[in-house]
Image (tube, rainbow, N blue to C red):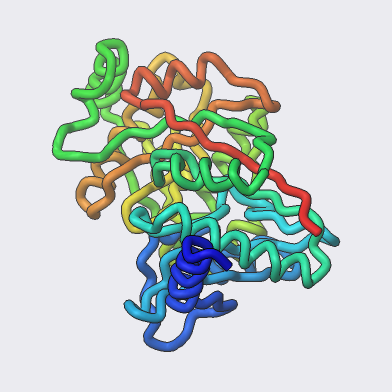
Amino acid sequence: MSFLKKTIFEIKKILMEQFELHNSVIDGGEYDYPQLLYSTPAFLKANNNLPQKHFYFFNKNSHKYLAHLAVSVDGDIAVSPLKAPFGGVEFEDSLSAVDLKNFIKAVERTLASDGVREIRLHQPPENYQLQDTINDVLLELEYDIIQERDYHGIDIDGLPLSEKMVDMQKRRLKKCEKSGFTYKKYRKSELAGAFHQIDRWRTAADKRLSMTWADLHNSSKRNPKAYHAFGIENEHGLMIAGSIVVKVSDRVLYNFFPASYDAYNAYSPMVMLTNKIYEWGQANGFTHLDLGTSYVHKNVNTGLRLFKERLGGKVYRAWSWRKKIS
């Protein structure tokens, strides 16, 4: 072995000796990557009944976990996630491409030994975490892009949301306020009522929810701080707009299931509701409001996309990947 090859081999050996692959978190181990709700054991236990595997990349020197991947195994296919907007590889921002590559290769070897022949990863959009490094690593590891999706989101900062809206939305906000509409954050015991009303509005608009009440209720019990219901009520206390909002991480709120009563379309109470959710995020330390995608029946709904952009939403891209392994 040449001196150069031997040196490279020794460096790789030292790097790998620094890390371990764990299938669960050890006592005293700390997370050093941004954790997303959709990849947590508690969420996935409520999400589906398939076998689930967790892979944690542990730094023995710092005693911290620097990356994580959770998959649901359906036959010989491992999917992350199976029934959620996104999941995929979570990683600490300063983790090098070399270490990230070693982590994914170790996961591939373990899954292959368990009979998995294909891996599918649905990575989060870039308003959660920049994806440049993981994209480069996955391409180098010969993953194929199978889907690209656009999300909209608004940074939550010291500015009021009204300053980020276009003039038309500002006028609608003032119209709602002058009409005596009021904002309400519903109690946990009121989550079911809010969900069912939103479900009726979405069904009438042919925008059915992607989650049943039974599934959301089960997930809410396992993740008691994750789901919040917000609404706008008219002067008689009738709910005219509502949304189920998800705490996806310590810094991001996801406007998961928004809908409104079509009799009030002239007022656009969803503008007022989004403004109030933004204010709640400000008051509770969140830094971003995810408005989700604008796809209806797999096609971009232009009206929905424009509505989000007029609220101040910016576009963020997400990628899905697939690789055959053996």
